[in-house]
Length: 220
Image 1 (spheres, one colour):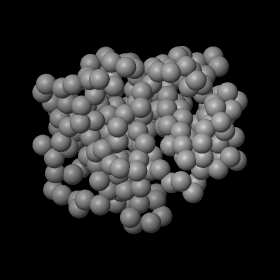
Image 2: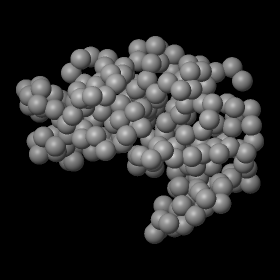
Image 3: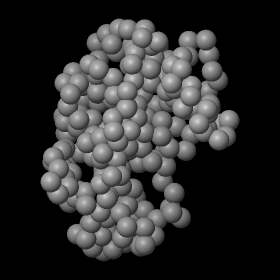
């Protein structure tokens, strides 16, 4: 299939299971490790959608894909780069067929103003970022916090480390870039969220991906 540099898909957690949905026996065991049925359903549904969409890009059967996890828990499939982020009933899946070994990370967060505080910001932002954040009018601090946070998490997802790296060590002060001590500098971009009230960021090939990322229909 013809694809953009990065294909983006919005997935909903409240869909029903259908005959075309599939998870592997190992994924079913992981689903059953969740305590609550709704969490088991969410894991099965999103993993099934991820399988189906990756298979579409690879021209393979979903059941034939082997999804492995790195030592940090990042899911991988040979021959394709992808990243998934979940928040409050929705997930975003980013897929890049070309340059499959290049890093790719996506982060998607529902904006919850009451969760943002000076104490939380001090635990998540570097010193220079925190100084800039404190100088902002209070009316701008919530959105600014989520912009910092999604850029940082997209960067860590692209590296595949997750929060083995403290978010305060991830520096996003240089516009369009993120870095951390001893780690690769990568390009990052904020994207417009498809749903109001959410923040969205991508990390990978940088500004090129911002312009060439394209929303795709997951139902096709």
